[in-house]
Length: 212
Image 1 (cartoon, rainbow, N blue to C red):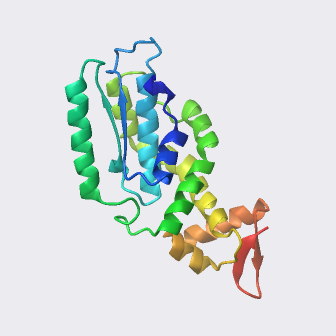
Image 2 (image 1 turned 30 degrees about the vertical axis):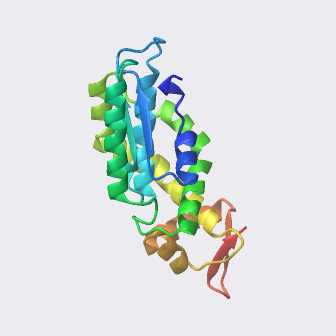
């Protein structure tokens, strides 16, 4: 299978199924068998997902991509052995980051719900300007990418988590912030925007928010 078929949904599903790490192997860059250079697409998806994991409080090193040829069986084994050792050192998913099973599931579900949106913005705004290793490394390590990611993705991820947190129960701003590691100002901003969009309501008598 071409590594270009790698989708954010595949990666997040692997983590949701309890895997502590995800390893992606692709053809060497600039040596595409299908002339589509899908391995660059896989590289872009990996960078975006690493940033997504970090925003969820998960170690981004749980996701790794490596490139090799079809005849590099020994190299593949070496890469996988090294990655497996690194994941064991990091520890179990969520537990090592101090995130309980229920909150971990909520965070991964919230991210999964954003996958269709992320596919769209990746094509339009979060894609490197050229398919070269240098261009990808420069783009994804840039302050501009961090700014775009926070502007386009981070807020939607936070709101998605809040909507799931409020599913079936009402919570105060303080409880929301404590559960998701958000500051009071961040919670206030997200709740204000969500209220204007008709997503949440505020119960003044109980000083808490609920789904509309």
